[in-house]
Image 1 (cartoon, rainbow, N blue to C red):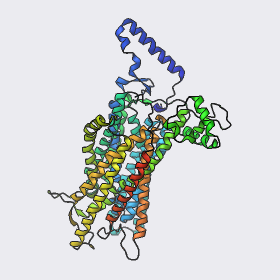
Image 2: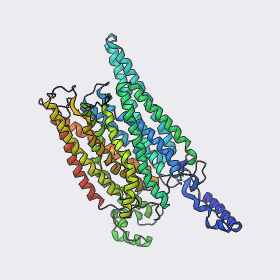
Image 3: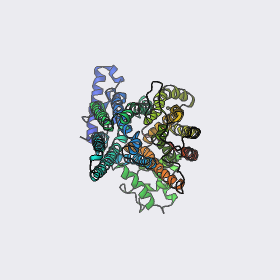
Image 4: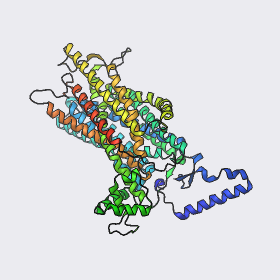
Length: 598
């Protein structure tokens, strides 16, 4: 049964409402106090349980269901970052690629993984439903991780062949290993594309936006969702990167698959508690939005006086929303001027189309932040690999594990944000979430810009120390500078994520119509997909412009001759421009209040 797309006919609704009404009347006659608490108050509109029955608020959804969903997200992030956080090390190590090529490939893969959710969300919202899509994507995820472990096994076998092995056989084996590795890698990206937007939307669906308390809890859910996600990431960076660098890549790829399988089991255990959104036999929401744009274009010659007359006939009040993107109001009229119901769009459909187009400037101006976000798993990691990573006990911190400071910063600050900052800000502003979502996103952008400036200053110092100790042409020798100098830039990255990443998640979920919320979260993820691709393009362009004629590029394999500091300062300048454009776009944004009654 596809629980998310159950068809609910008017006859079924009428029958059940009649039963509920008769039961309430009977109880009020036998027990007058029962009339004070009718049964209907305990049901959640627009949702069914796993058996197709109307769900009761007291026994379904909210945190009892969200906890299961958060667990599967922790497992998925553990698996995803178990690959992405140390991918550049595997590419430049066992696969022998250059730093610039590896960084570009990591960004390209991250970009694909963040764009594929658009396809996954479309499939979920249009055909399979979120629940089924999550299960199917999880199974594909586990398969991809298993094949990655297999490709690493082939690498171990090839390397153990030594010089006695035939060169042609080794070359063929390496080629097959590379093909299998990248095929498995993109299979994981494909699975993540179906998993990521659906899990988060399905978790948020467990909270009823028409109930004030559950609506506040839903806002808190996005904070604790990100907390759980980063807890999984922190575990990955603390344990799995060490296993990959020092024990075995085979084990390092196999463990995420095992964890992902465990997460799927936990998700299935919550089946009986979930609220499944009801979808009737109405037109596909994506098609509906598209039809608004098509009809508005077909009616482009219609005068605004005709539109005004139609709005008056429909009783549409002149509001900021109705005045904005007024050309879409032309979809309220049929192309030939008739009023056939099948040929025109409803007011709600037009407003849904406006809600989608309003997101475009916010999406575009957030791309610079996504480019900045992509650097922590590439150049930050390579930067840390050249520095003194030993601790007082003699343990050497894996370079990729430095990203754990981002997760640690998030894990420490989210409880402070949710339990201290939000209540204090709410008392001052009256906003349920303390500050508006757009204010939250913009604040994180400022923090990320500061982190880049600090990263540039630290890199300048690292290069100076390398020069003072005569290590410019000795890239293998460790630069005598403690890796703890990198902690501030990582910590500020995490703090920026608490504001911008969580804010974008909630914003793109909250501002989309209910039927398109998986697509909304996919649009949020696509910001980072396009950002990663832009980062890959930017790196390639700078590599070509700064190399040649015997010069070392900004991304030279010998980082002591590279200039990552210039790159960080360039990104900081771009971030400042991006933030300015973002602030300008927010001035014209009108919030949508889908389903809220307060």
